Structures are given as structure tokens and as C-alpha cells.
Amino acid sequence: MSPTIILICFLAYTALLFIITWFTARKSTNRSFFLGNKASPWFVVAYGMIGASMSGVTFMSVPGWVGTASFSYMMVVVGYIFGYTVIATVLLPLYYRLNLTSIYSYLETRFGFWSYKTGAFYFILSRTIGASFRMFLVVNVLQIFIFDAWHVPFFVTVLIFIVLILLYTFKGGIKTIIWTDTIQTTFMLLSLVISIYLIVDSMGINLGEMINKVYLSNYSKMIFTDWSDKRFFLKELFSGTFIAIVMTGLDQEMMQKNLSCRSLRDAQKNMFTFTGIMVFVNLVILFLGASLYIFTSFKGIQLPVRTDDLFPLVAINHLGPVAGLVFLIGLISAAYPSADGALTSLTTSFSIDFLGVNKRTDLSEPEKKRIRQMVHIVFAALLLMVIILFRAINDRAVIDKLFTVAGYTYGPLLGLYAFGLFTKFSVHDRWVPLIALLSPVICYFLSEYSVDIFHGYRFGFELLILNGFITFAGLFLFRKKRDPKQKK
Image (cartoon, rainbow, N blue to C red; front, side):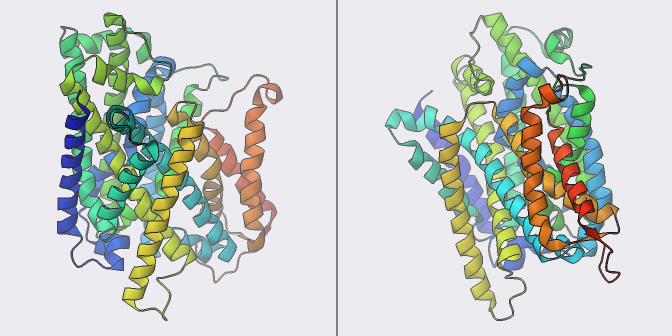
């Protein structure tokens, strides 16, 4: 496929996003940037969140992951259902009752200054790393199939991608993202469906026959009963529950979209609708992964060394130019929502949680806007540097890295919120940063030596739960009688 054609499609797609930006970002204010003026239609948010939650990581890594993990990831998705239910019935009512813009300000109300800053810090760390992982996938593909042919350095490719995202989120923020996410979700889903159709058509069979092939293959196995296996179904079920809670319910990016809805009831309808669509879409992605492996076996295609490369290898090199173009548009569509949402939420969190622009009475609205815009630019530069660093050290399936990192950085948030919501104790606030630092360190050593310590047991995604439990236990040790004036 010609790099020029790919570039034209990429620019055309990006131009569409800028058209949406022009309509949504007019007369924008800090309130519209942070909360979309609390006027986002819930069904638009629910649909757009599919693209934001899937990202380029899911789009590329999960299909390749089927080769080693089969459909076991579906048990994680089943866990998501329970996690999203907790978000809709426990966390969203709390956030709306306290009228929060940054969800981490709850920690200041509940525990104090240092707990608040610790929670916000871990979000910024988690989202910076996670968003960089996701963006790396897309930028790396663009580099290989477009810019390498023109001898453009990887640094320049990353810079172009970051600048484009910076420009269309710079003014409108969450108000713009709510609507651009819907376009991006649509293109991503179309890409999945068309890719499956092209694979089936290339093999000369119909969809029903492919479904039967997948069902009869080892790839369709969902439940693994060996307790020491990373794919053990109970580990994945519980891990999925808590991954959903922390990576959606305790994540400023995802909750910022929910908080932009008109009311709590609308936000809850959004979460339940989003849950149903999410389960179906993940099943389609796993089906695509199995179809890719069946296709490579049928055609005698050698599998790539990295499973992340399976989808692009088949789409671009073995299914014709249309499939390659569909894949690239789908990948870009999956990556843009996670990138733009991350940049906006990082700006929101730092502006409110560390700079306190929403509380600064000594600043005019134009001054607050200038501060927010400067923060936006700084985080864009930070993402640029982390993506380049990640390319230098990347050596495993990206989705595995993403959840491993989440297990370390989201764990303290899980422990903090669980302790705040389910106990009546307060804590010695000044010790919270130390507790939140030691917990991931302890988890790291337990994970590294778990085979020896626990007689062959290997940690998987449930490392997140352990991390949260250790943080919870640390807070319990440093508890004190709760001030009755504090809000829950």
C-alpha cells in the first residue's frame, strides 16, 4: 500500500476531527473544558466511551493475545460487568453528591491534604504511562508504514501525532472529546466488522462456518481451572472487577466524561448502556483474534514474533489494500480517544488538584484559562518523551504491560477509596504517601518471587487486588478515630 495513500487517509480523518472541534469549542470556558457545561447527552457519552476504553492497545494486542490466552480474556470482561455496576451504584452517586470536578478531591474531604495529593499523583503517573503505551502502538505503525519510507525520524512522527491531539483538545477539552469519541468509536467498530468479513471472504467460507471453526478450536476456551495459571478463571474474574473499578471508576479521564452528563440518573444510564456494548465488542475482538490465527494457518503464513504484530501483518500484507486501509483507520480511531482523553484529564487533574485553579479567587477567568492551557502543553510534551522512552524498552505484549503497570499504580487508589467508603476510620494523613509508596514495592517483590514463596503460584492481573489490600491494611494500621464532621 502506498505511504502517500495512507497519509492522505490519516489527514482526512484528522481533518474530520478538527471540523467537529470547530463546532464544539466555540465560546469555550474552563467549565466547558473540565465538565462540558454538564450538558453531555448520556447516550453520546456511552457510545463514545467504547472507543476511549478500548484504545489501540485492545485493538492490536487482544487479537494477538488469543494465540496464548485463548478466550480467557472474556472472564476479565465478565468481571468488568460487576465493576461497572459498582461504579454506577456506589461511586457515581458519591461524585455527584459532592459535586466534584476532580474525583480525587474526595480524598481531601475524607482524609486530608496528603491523601488527596497522593491519589492525584498516582492518577497522573498511571495515566501518563498508560496513555503513552497506547499512543506508542499507533505512532509505531504510522512510522513503519508511512514515515520510514520517507526517512522521517520516529521523534518527528510522535511530535506530529501529539501536536494534532493538542490542537483539537486545546480549547474545547471534554466538550469536544465527547463528540469526537463518537466518530472514532464508529470507525473502530466498522474496522473490526469489515476485517472479519474480509478474512472470511478470503478463505471462501461464510460467517457461520467461521463461527463454527472458532468454536471447535482451542482458541475459544474461556475457562482455565489451574489455580497456578495466570489465566485461572477466578483470578481473571475478580481482577476484571477491580480493573474496571480503578481504571474507570477511580480514573479522572473516564469519570470526567460521566460527570459531564446532565444528572446522576443520566450518568448511570450511560454506565449500564456502556457495559452492555462493551461486553459484545470485546467478544467480537476475541473472535477476530481467533479468525486471524485460523486464517494464518489456512494460508500457511508464518506467525510474527510479537503477537501484537499479528493483526497488522495479516491486514496489511495478506488481505489486500482495502483491508490494510481499514486496519489503519480502525487503529487510529481506537488510539485517538485514549490520547485526547488522557491529555484532557491530566490537564484537569493537575490544574485542579495541584494548582487549585478552581479555588483561586485572586485569578481572573482569562488567567485561569492561560494556566490551564500551559499545563495542557506541558503534559503534551511529557507524553512525547514517555512514548520515545517506551519505544526503547518495549519487549512484551503491550496489553500485558498496561495491566501490570496498572496493578502497581492504581492499587493505592483502590486501597484509599475502599478504606474511605467502607470504614468509619480516619487516618494519620501525613503517613499516607509512605503507605502508598511501600504497597507497590511490596507487591513487586511478592510478584517476582511468588513461585518460590507460594509453591508455584504466579500472579496475574489480581496483583491489583493485592496492592489495594496492602494499602488498605497500611491505612488501617495508621487509623485514628474519625472526625464526626468529616463527610463520607
